[in-house]
Image 1 (cartoon, protein in one colour):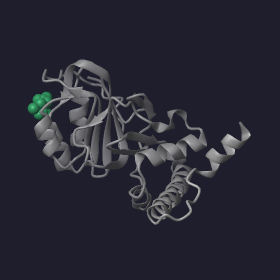
Image 2 (cartoon, helix red, strand yellow):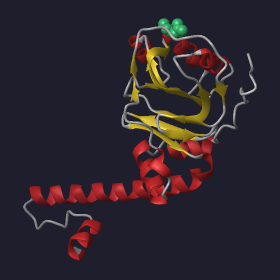
Image 3 (cartoon, protein in one colour):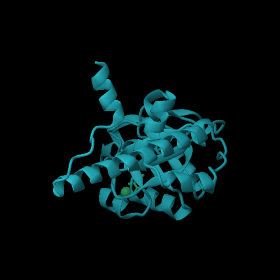
Length: 234
Ligand SMILES: O=C([O-])CC(=O)C(=O)O
Ligand SMILES: [Mg+2]
C-alpha cells in the first residue's frame, strides 16, 4: 500500500487566535468572509449535523481523503493525531456504509483531538453523542465501514462542499461548520469582530425599543440604517 500521500500534521493555529475565535460564532465568521468575498463564505453543507448540538468545535484542520466508506485512513489519522486538531474527513457523502462509530470516536477523544467532521455517515449515535469530542456527520447508517486504504492524509480536500487545506481554521456549532482559510484568518477575524460589535449595538437598539414601548414613551427607530437607506433609495 502506498502511503506517499500521508503527509505530516500542519502547524497548530496559535492559542491567541483560538481565544479570539471562542468569542465568535460560525455564523459571524461566515459574515466576515461574505464581506471579504470568500467563496461560499467557508460554509459547509447544511446536511452536515452535530451529533450533539450543545458542543462547540474549534481547531486546526487535519484532513483525510477517503471514499466508499473506507475508514482505514481515518484510523491512521486518529492514531497519528495530536490535541488541537480537527479531523476533516472528505468522505464524498457516501451513503452505503458508515465511516466510524463510538470506538473510533473514543480513540480520537483519548488522543485529544478537538473534533471530527465526516462528509458521510456514522453509527453508534448514543455512544458518540455521550463523548466530549464534537462530531459532525451527514447521517446515521449501521452498516460497517470498509477497510482498504490507503486514502490520503493532510492533502487539500473538498469536504461537505468546501475546499479545506490542512491547517485551516474549523469552527462548528448548532448552526453548522465554517472553514476559514489559514492565510485569511487575520482579516476574517477582524471582519467577524466588526460584525459582532454591530450585533451588540443592534441588541441594544432592540432592547431600548422594547423598554420605550413598555413605558409608553416615544419609540426610537427600530430599523437598521442600511434598511432605511435602501427604502429611501428604491
Ligand atoms: O467498527 C468500526 O469500524 C466502526 C465502529 O463501529 C466504531 O468505531 O465503533
Ligand atoms: Mg461501533
